[in-house]
Image (tube, rainbow, N blue to C red; front, top):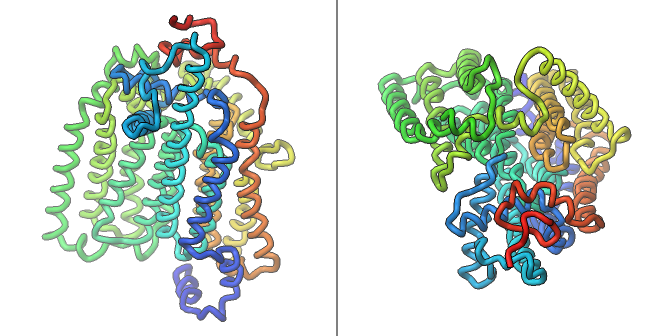
Length: 547
């Protein structure tokens, strides 16, 4: 029935669809003009509330990233592996080299940074380096916004819905913060979101190349993990979410139903997966090496053994694929090829660590949940630890619900107001018979709430919004795309306009706070000896500055 309604709406002339007036008025600049305006807005915000902030204002994590880029450009090994921020550090490292080659950055390596005992020279060099890093953050954010727009346009039927979703993504609370500081969530959260959108596209529309799309999604998931291991909580939800996006149009195309053509491709995919796994094995071996794990102070999460949940996630993914194949008439050959393709894609993504290999990165990526435990304040162990963890999560869940109310806990997070519309939208979709999209949006919200609950253990900082806001934004876009009649309702344009303005304005308090707060740099002394062992700070007694 959903497909029949969609077809009739798509076939109706513009004059018969009053909803066009509302969406057209909200996207009056068109697709390219709208994207240009969104990027211009992000750049303007960056210049006004970010670039010129004093260099130590966002030392956590600006200093960690800049310091490790300087260390690597000096030919020394990377020292920071907590997240592990692999691509963020790598991008800043190479951007420093480029700027230095162009004569636009004096100190592109640690040995070129003046001693902290020469205060003015040190401040000038660090200001240059940190501002260059902020430019990397802006460029990265802009690229992620444009990629989100491109994939969202493929995931929904109406480009105007995709543009409004892009506006919400670009001016979400998380993106507003990440576009001006160096944090690992920007790349990790965005890449995982792209993987989800690719899965939605692949689930809805069958093609000869669908296994390749699944390989790309798996590679994106692995790349996301390489920048922040916390992306595992997003990735773990994908098999369940993908099951809800099947359609009759997702049945295998003729190619995959012809054994003489399909099975040779299956064998080739299996061979490719085996080859890539063999190439990636040294990285995995470094990640599971007992000495490396001990050096990272990791402890097994389940049953006193490492590797349990990683294997369970792969098996759960394969099981979800088998169920999807049964429900939506995907051939055995295509299912087998797809299962091999996700292994190949994950292995190919893991090989990215060889761009600048360090065993510390391998340990973090191969053991993501164990790495997270140290940050979350949770601990593997017996009954007493489990009881403590459950109580902690319960308190976090209550804190999240308070934040979603906005009035009980205000925050610069425009996505909260999207939730206020999504919940009644889900009810409306169910009542009018669009139950599949109602289920999709419900699960998206539940996943976002679960991620926020885990993040609330670490106070649910604005930087973490980028891990959950995409689920909220995609849920809203799916509902609006499937229910064009809501744009005909009284007040629809006013609500859409206000919501757009709320995103553009409501996401800015955190950047403004960054520019105006009066606190000094003394807090950096709490961790500089851990994260910047070779870079003394002028205001910290230890380590002492060199002459």
